[in-house]
Image 1 (cartoon, rainbow, N blue to C red):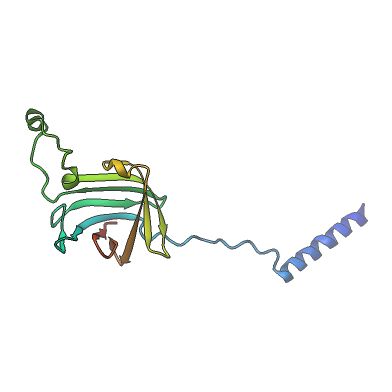
Image 2 (cartoon, rainbow, N blue to C red; image 1 turned 90 degrees about the vertical axis):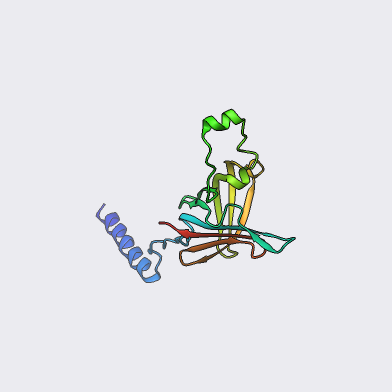
Length: 169
């Protein structure tokens, strides 16, 4: 029994020495994914579209639109946008006048939510829309080219759309 214990200890010690010499006892290094630079809440400061017929930029939600885009670290997306001058109409008045506020929803407010994926090499964020106020977006992927400059996020195709946001948190 002593011989078996001695042989076992011999192999145990020598296997440890061999592992140290060859580096086979090293713990695997943690491969961390790159930090998500878009994670956080962003306040909308510009929402403009180019009118290709006139060549002029149109601020569909006014010069100072309201809104936030939130991208969580766990890839949840939530965005809401409204005009800089909200409609001043009460619920009772709308009911009396039979006003359908959703006829011109694009110019009053909109929002949607879902998840997102990020392609940092190509600078594209893709919104995977699960629900919201734009019915034709639901269950679609909406890729958006972006530029990040410090605490300013530009979501733009460089030709006809320009969304400018600043980091809030």
